[in-house]
Length: 503
Ligand code: MCA
Ligand code: AMP
Image (cartoon, rainbow, N blue to C red; front, side, top):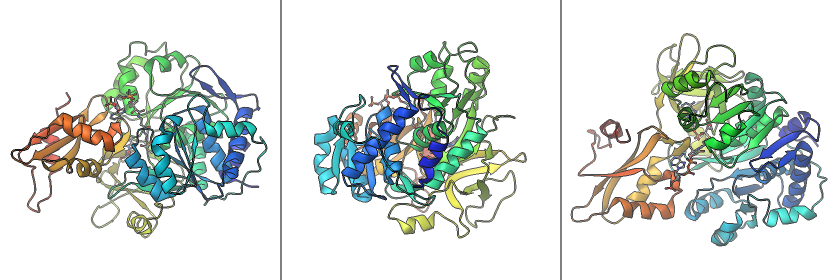
């Protein structure tokens, strides 16, 4: 039966014996293996009661099997819900209760810890580890490798990805088969992917970048990838000779640019280095180019929209810009207050419309409505301008968000937790320039006289509740926070005051 995204993947299939994935340990998964295991896992999910439209929440270490599980969800019409491996039980509890998954797949090491919260939300718990073990793979061994793909159209949901958003708690961005397929095809074309490409995959697979941009583009090109567990410069450099493309966040390139093994010779076989998820400093672009001769191609996207813009494959890749709107994607710059369109060179809110734009936030029709204009444009929360040549520049954020090493951190979430610590009057969390992570999460805290909550104590408290990447790199104590006449905390003043904290 027609299955919008998976049929397109089938159409792009090279020979069954062609390599899809080579793991760090050198294990090869062919496209035939992909069809076989994704069918078995789809049968297991159906046998566990997963029907079309049911959510399958997944918090597992990166592995080829985890990618097969994503594909199994596509095939059986389930909605794949990947979760950051760093999330604590408290954080997961929120996602499970909001998304009400039919099945939760966790690492065996976390199974006991999660059992209660999974049971309480009415889901079944299965396990999967990064060595091909766990209950799910046990069941897959006995399952049939024949599976009739469930019918799914362009508007049916393929995935829900939680995003910190601009206000309130995390929101589940609903992404359809059509959203994912249109973006994968567009990126394949603009980045000239073919079956001969081999991607170095060192990103996590629970976000748009590592999952959809990296994996869907590889699949839709019939290409292959080196699937590495995480960013490790040694492992990456060792694969330059056999690979063609690297996708990374700016922190990858900051680190690679400092690595003496990275030079013209070692990168000669590579055809493309792509960066996104956070601003790439011009300085990093320049240094990398001087060392390797490669101009990093920067692109811009969001969980809600997939990719929106890209610097050109041929033509000038201009540092400090995110390139042109992708084919089929409309971008405009509007006045933040009136919504009126602005002229080239003027700075305003970036708004996006196209087949890439999501179907709304899960269970939040009001929030969804608030983020779209009446004529269908999605309000990104990013401030930018489009220059005379049509290049999009992102010049800031209209949303209170910190991006650290490509991960989004929502200050309000951290502030709410810090404010619960005994002796804390109030706090403000900001991002300030950080050479490695781009922005360093920094907390500015006002303590009650006589109380002395210290940095270590607050960090220990937060560590129980929040994923570690969200924890402030520094906590600073002040007598009071700067406020404007309306009483609003002036984070811009704090950002200026601490601009050189991490120099
Ligand atoms: C790890 N740590 C971090 C981060 N990563 N702290 C702040 N920001 C981070 N990004 C902390 C860990 O908790 C740990 O602290 C310590 O740093 C070392 O951890 P380790 O795992 O060794 O870190 P690493 O391997 O050096 O990781 C840095 C990294 C990684 C390679 C930059 O964070 C990464 O792969 N980031 C990619 C994120 C990504 O895929 N974003 C795409 C989102 P402790 O010792 O205290 O525990 S999708 C998106 O944004 C849109 C759609 C788009 O446009 O793509
Ligand atoms: P997320 O919520 O994880 O999808 O993050 C999306 C946000 O990351 C965007 O709204 C931008 O603020 C930021 N972003 C992604 N790519 C870039 C880029 N190339 N340059 C600047 N910001 C970016």
